[in-house]
Amino acid sequence: MPTWPFWRRPKPLSREQSLASVPLRNQAVREERTDAGELRLVIPLRPAWWARLLSRVLYVPRQRRIVLDEIGGYVWGLCDGKRSVRDLVGALSTRYKLHRKEAEVSVVAYLRQLARRGLIGIAVLNVHETPRTQER
Image 1: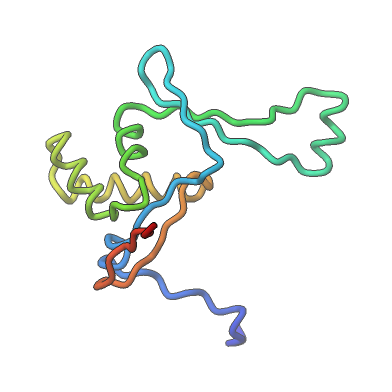
Image 2: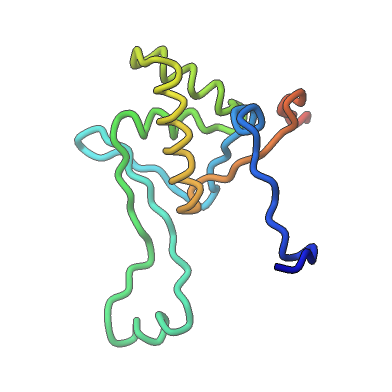
């Protein structure tokens, strides 16, 4: 495989970098509470050109809904752009009395799923850098 710059894959993050990263919610996603107390995320869809044509004949939904369980809703609530993944792991292990390594594996896998679906973004910081807050 050629070594052209646009074909190079970025280097994978180290464990320290991934734990220091900060998950950020997608601003387009809305939250709703169900009657059972579960958290429902409402994601607006932007249909492709062929879906817009198809929507004239058939029903094409304009939004997608995902229902989170108690633990998923708790982690979603902690993704505020200020807490790092390490903070989320600590909070989850404390609240649900999990071993820290179990909580780390669970939180990282869950955040990876949310990121793949476009519900969150991950801000990767240097290991020694702290998240900046906006001053007004």
